[in-house]
Length: 260
Image (tube, rainbow, N blue to C red; front, side, top):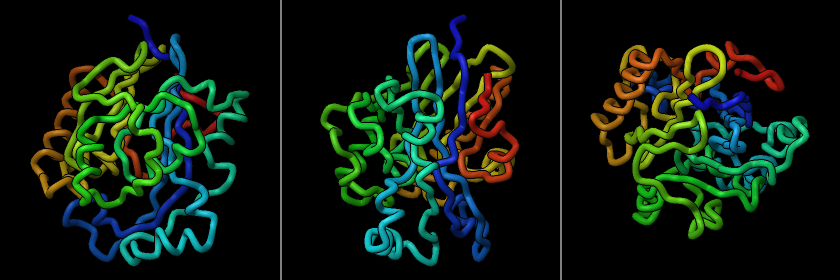
């Protein structure tokens, strides 16, 4: 079996928000600090970047920060992001540039996952067709449409598929219309499943509780995706990596260390 070579979790920022955002109808009045993550995967046929974090300009420029993020208060505080947490900074530390990224794979189009596209210009972008269909409705909240530059040339997907050797995309809709996760086969240990926002917290998986935000309030669809992830965990002896769980993130090897 051809496997990926190594996997780096990248902390692209943090955001404090009310826990009910991550756990549906649970956590009102309780605020958590959540990591905003991207993942760099090296394979025998090139490199895949899962998500790209926020647009640093919106976070670091005071007037843009007020314009874009103040309307989200008090549910969300504005993201916190340093220059060193931008994707190009991580790539530079590995001796790479955006030209060394073969595929940018967007789990979905929320600002904390797609905003950093401006930092990886010219890369092939993969996303589910249903994400752009949802944007076209005008009611897909949490998306800044001006960040979706070049979308007419994106590679649109509609089902599970092989992204690269050792890297398999799986459809996990519910949180968003076309949310996708990744299954990564590595040389050592168990496969890793990057859940994305299908499971923000370990609690989503353990208690089978849907994310706080479900596209068109389709909670059953989000729960089906959580159960799909858990079936992969059982059948393939995989590790499930929740996406916004700070304690879980701290349990992983920290950059520039990697999983292999």
